Length: 590
Ligand SMILES: Nc1ncnc2c1ncn2[C@@H]1O[C@H](COP(=O)(O)OP(=O)(O)OP(=O)(O)O)[C@@H](O)[C@H]1O
Image 1 (cartoon, protein in one colour):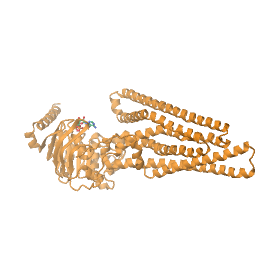
Image 2 (cartoon, rainbow, N blue to C red; image 1 turned 120 degrees about the horizontal axis):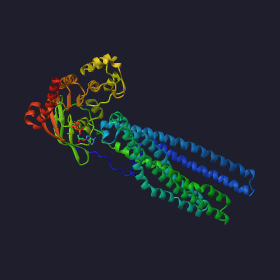
Image 3 (cartoon, protein in one colour; image 1 turned 90 degrees about the vertical axis):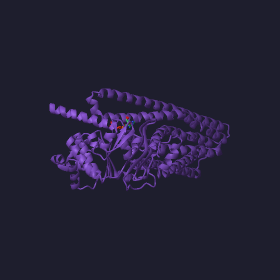
Image 4 (cartoon, rainbow, N blue to C red; image 1 turned 90 degrees about the horizontal axis):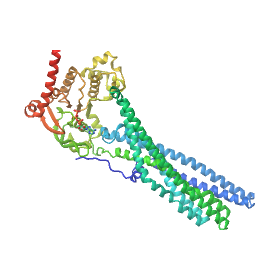
């Protein structure tokens, strides 16, 4: 039994889940925090030395014996600060690079592990945005925000203890102002998080819409719908601009609020310190120290405020990433497929909650048999094909291949043994040989020629320059039927054990389809072939035919039995035969 819904993530779980994911970057983040803290110590040293020098200069008691050690301390502190700034920046950069590398590798590894089922949780465009921009934002979050967050906690406490020696009252006053900045940040956080989520959603929608418009440009032009689509895209871009401006307004408002608190409270601290100096409760050098250091109480938090907005973006991206990373993976005990019989028990599937596309399908396909799935358009044939190929993993009930549920099959074994050929299988830019070798990289020229002959594409390819025949993007210089034959040849070369052909011959002429069907018939016995087709005459050749109607299996068996016993099947078959006979008769007549 299977169900795998992504968990509803609470934002607070994001850092807790992210940090363990980023491996070596944690070390660099910790080093960044350490050097930022040492940088602060350097600042305190330099300011103290300077304050002493100024006081003695003011009192005209600055003689050489005093000048040299204080100047040395000043120079040493400035050097320490310089080194720490450099090392802190260096480690922050390294943390950022490491975060990017690690997260992208994790996303990639997850995609490899989950195989085709990633499509259930995200679209290709959203995936691209997540892996590129999303990871970029997370890098800011982990390489910038997290170290700054730690520094913002350490800096005020460190300064408090140091300034408390000079004047407890001023130190306490400055410390009291510090929590106001996080309070202000939390005040805007709730709205900001909602806004950032909406912003990220609009951004991915825009990306998806753009990709789809590009992919469907020819169709849009055919129907003269490109202008309307253009307007739609403009409206979507305008929506994105509006939400971006909203985000910027929110950021500006919260930065202004934080500036007011930071600089206002610093000014208050300075005024109190000056009053203490004037009343003689504090020496001049201590007053100078307070004046020069009081802003350091607030600056780390103020800087945290600016990282905070990028971090909100990062958290929104992380939520998308976790939805992908949470996809069910093959269990530890996942093993190799060594038997290929397929058994579905009460298998159901829904794309949309509450609307079942497939209901309680129970069927068996013995290894090495030739099966067909038929049914009216929308009855769920491709969905069933997707389930059998491991694309849809959110099914209910059970599917066992060779006695194993999908979770118990290693992805490598799935990739090798089950081959799904869709009607629009992708043909890549390159040569015929390049595309064939995707099926089997080590295939010899003879093997490639043999599969091309099996799908009746050999003569055409030879006439076009042989295996080196160049192919344009998506096989644009091939006909629909040629593309399908090439995709089939690639699948044959791959050499799986279960072939699922989803309308894989739909664009072929009758002669080519006939030869492909003959290939399929010869394969069956050795391989399992599942043919999903609208062509009832092709399905009728299968040993077992499964009839789907509105997501329910309404019949199964051989053609003769089904035709006699299942009125729905007989209706489908006769209906199509009638149309074909009519078309043939019309051709003869014309
Ligand atoms: N990605 C999806 N999201 C939501 N609903 C979907 C999705 N894909 C298919 N459906 C719905 O599931 C139902 C079955 O679709 P499916 O593609 O499996 O049917 P089919 O029998 O293969 O149809 P056809 O013969 O036209 O290809 C349809 O009602 C369809 O609207």
